[in-house]
Length: 164
Image: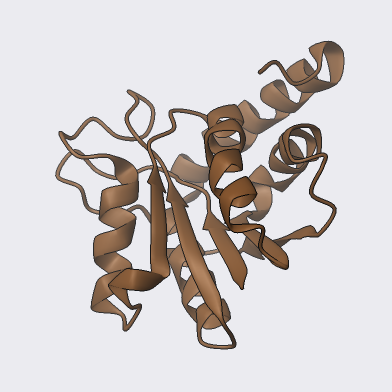
């Protein structure tokens, strides 16, 4: 068995998924169609990405179920509030299922930080990789602040390490 781990991203106050979330789910869908995959979705609540009454992962799941993903193949919704929690809170599912492969889906602007975090948290699991969703269609007014946030967050990780 293989696991696709889709990292959360923003949604609108009504639950509508952002362009980043949609591109990550499109990558997940393509991977899912190629093999024996189970899916783990991350994202809970936070003022910077989800202020609804349902976790972000719920909205991801609803989208996937509309696009031919089987309900039984979504094995966990991780209600994380940031990238370190994406890794630390999903680690139990990885340990439980002991997949032969773990594919982490995120956006290219988030990759550097996600890699630092998952390298630290998933250290015992040698076989995980990333597949990156493009942010090329995201409005620059939305994307540019996210890129700036990533630069600051990566520098913090480099200066202080991953704290979990």
